Every structure is written in C-alpha cells, then in structure tokens.
Length: 623
Image (cartoon, rainbow, N blue to C red; front, side, top):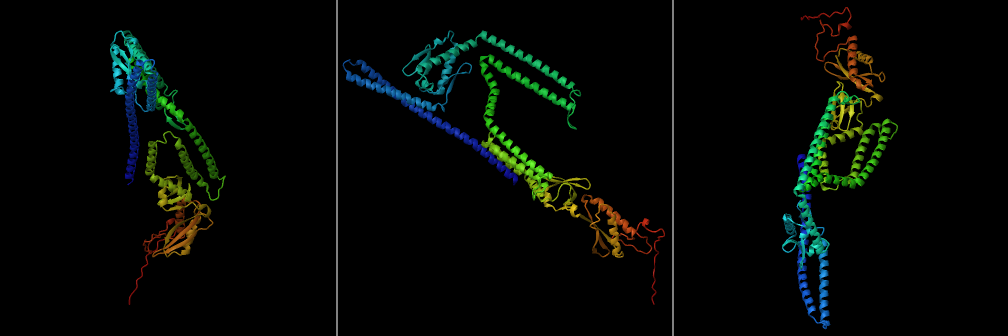
C-alpha cells in the first residue's frame, strides 16, 4: 500500500510539472496567436492606407494639373483647388501619424529578419513586407543579391545608385535592383526613406569592400602564417607545461617519508605518507589537465579569430564561458539583499540557541532549579527545542532562497518531504518512544534493568535506541519502540533510598526443624558481603509441598549492579551453613534409604569417628 501511495504521489508530481510546462507552452502559443492577429490587422490597415494614399496621390496630381491650367484671374476656383490640396496633405500627414503609432505598438512583439553578410554577420534587419514579398522573403532576396556583388571586379561604394520612385527608394547596381526601401521601412527605423537608403548603401558597400580585402591572396597568406605561429606557440607552451608537471610529480614522489610524512589528527592517522603522496599527485594531474584545456580553449578562439569565416566561432566559444560567468555574477549581485537577510536571520537564531544552551547547561549542572523539571530532562529538551528552532529558521529563510517561488522547486520540496515521511515512519516511532521514555524517567544511564528478557546496565539512551551491557559484557541495542511495548524492571531506581531486596529459595525436607533452617539461612546472609545489616535479613516459608518446605531468604543491598556476585556468594554461604548445622540439601525427588547409607554432607564437616549406620531389619513373627 505504501509503495502504491509513493508511485501515485510521483505520478501526480510529474503530472503537475508537465502541466506547468504545458501551461507555459499554451501561454506561448496564445501570445504568438495574439501577435499574428496584431500583424494581420496591421497589414490589413496598411493595405487600406496604401489604397487611400494612391487615391489621394491621383487626386493630388489632378488638382495640381488643374491649378496650373487656371488663369491668374480665376482666384475663386484657385482657392477652392488649393483648399482641396491642403485637405489631401493633412490627410496624408494624419495617415503617416496613424501608421507610425501602429508600428510603435508592434516594436516589442514584432519579429525581424536579418540580412546576413559574407561572414554571417548581420548587416541590417527587415521588419515589413513589400508587395507580394514577406519580410522573410525580402531579407533572403536582399542577402542573395548582395552576395552576388562580390564577383564585380571594379566594385566601389559609388557603384550603388539611389533611385527615387513614386512609392519607394531603390538601391541599384547597373540595371539590377538590390533592394527597395519603402515608407514602412523608414518608419520602422525612425528615419526618412532617402536617409535610410543612404545608410543601407554605405553598409552594403563597406561589407563588400571588407570581404574583398579580407579574402585577397596576400591577406590569406598572412592569416595562414599567423595561424601557424599561434599553433607553434601553443605546442611549445603545452610541451613545457607537461614537462613542468612531470618534474613536479617526480619532486613530490621524492619527498615521501621526508617532508611528506602523512597527516595525523591527534592519535588518528588520516593519511600515511604514501596515501598523502598519491593525493598530491592526483591534484597535480588534475591541475595539469585543467591548464592544458585552458590553453587550448584560449588558443582556439585566437585561431578562429584570424580567419574571417570563423570569427563567429571565436565569439561562440568565448560566449560559453563569458555568458554563464556574466549570468552568475549578475545573479549573485541581484541576490545580495536576500543573502544579507538570510545572514541576519541565521545570526539571530544562532545567538538565541546559544542562550537556550546556557540555560540547559545550568540546569544539567544543578545550578538552576525549576520545580517539576529534572536535570536529566535538560539535554533531550534542548535537542527538541533546537530541532524546532532550526525548522522555524528554515521556514523563515525559505522565501529568500533562490528559486523558492518556482513550482518545480516547490514540487521537489513536497516530494522530498513525503519521501522522508514514508521512509522514516519506523524511525519516527522510535524517536517518539525515546522522548516518552525520557520524560517518563523509567531509567537513567548506569541503572541495572530488565527489558523483556534482557538484563544489564543502561550505557546509552538516544532518540532511536537504548543500549544495554549485560553481565556477560554483551552490548544489546533495543529499539525504543520495543522498550515501550515491553515490561521494564528497574533494579536501581530506589536502591539508594530503600535498598533492593534480593532473595533466593531453598527446599528442605520435613525432617529438618524450621527454626534450625531459618537460623542457617540467616547465618549465610550475615556472612555475605555487600548486604545491609539494617534492615535485617528475614526468611519466608513460601510453600509446604509434598516432599519439602520452601524457604526464601530475603536480604537488602544498595549494590544493584552486583547482583550476580552477591547471589553467588550467598549460595556458597548457604551450602556452608547447612553443612555446618548437619542439614542435607537434597533434590526434591531424591530417594535414599537412611539405614546403611553415608550422609550427603561433605566429609570435611563430619566428625572423625563418624560411621555410616548399619541396616536395621525387623522381623515380626506371626502367631
């Protein structure tokens, strides 16, 4: 079930991410659709404006013709025609203003098409269509016509002629039109048609002359020679660089056991001499290859920059380093205010935590007393407060982290949180059990306890496990959740105040007087070390069975951690005292015929004239 839940969560997360990117694509498509609609509307209005301009131009030509044909005395007719001409001029000015406003509104969203030169450099850009040619078609056509001009032998900038027509200004070489500059082109470039034509003439002419100069045989020979010189310098530099690092590697190896003697932290050897030499040699090798790659990376743009056809490669290669470096620098600069805020937050929380740590230390040492709060609670409580403070600090800092408002970043954060929750469910139960055990004060470090079937001294309490050292010096780790679910006996908790009552049971036959047995057990207790004289030991008769009486000796001690030694000595003393008082300790099912058999008491405890009794046989004579 947990696995299914995890897979379902991952699927939902992936769906949300895909949905996010799908939304971005949809937004982009909507923006493109809006832009296309605006351009279509602009083209429609431009076509209508062009139609009106042609009509007005025709009317204007007719009116000017009529004005020239009028006699000087016909003033009324002349004023009427001039008034109509003025209206046409005003309408033309208004039309130009409206077109300029429409073009200005398209500057942000409109797409331009570059006219590329001979070395893939952009000469200028085309924004508007002309006749049946779209902006893209115009750019491709102009580019193709310009590149054909390189084959002209005696080309000069003045070879390009500027011819004004009714609607456009044409750039021509001989009988061929290179391009036509329209009214829309001039408005897009915020200038007049004639001025824009002169600018384009200069750009095109200079690009052709530059191409001819840079592709001449003399220039190419110079460029080839320079490239060979750069290659030779690079090879020489690489040769001596490799030789230098080979020399440094040998010097490093020679210092093994001399200057390089290993790295030690107190008594721990982090690196011996050989390992340290290997690490330094690895660093030497990495540094060598980094410098080799750097030299090649710097040399390649220089080589590409020599030849005009490959200059763009040089810019691209440098851009691979400069653009990310620039982006990183700008990102760091823009992030500085947030970084300072985070530093201030960390500073405040750090010193707040130091103040709490001071209170914890004082309570732990016993210098500060709080009613109902025990000193052994100080450290776990501090750990809990520390986790809460760090969590709160993380919540406060989170909005200032770079990319924290990104849906992907938030999705990953949620995914990691759920993954941590699923993966640590068992650990969390142990942590909670550890906290409960701490505040229940079931036991402390050094107590002799019995948890389930495990008996030993507590040597460690953590949030996850409790570690017990048994009397056989075995270390047993018990999960805190298991401790909570098991019964626990603490032998040490009240030992210092009331003492621990130790007890053992001996079964003796009914032929031994109970007073004698009581005295023997009390004598044995009195001889045992580590037993308290006050309260006094006492004997209980716990049962009267078929073949024997159960006697239980109880005695007090304050050494709960030494029970095994005390029990061993007590049992030895019980044997000695019973033997001294002539009491036989027999197995409950032991059968012995008393006549003719030696007593089970060891011979050391018997008198020298002791003899085993003879058999007694009685014969009863019947009448």
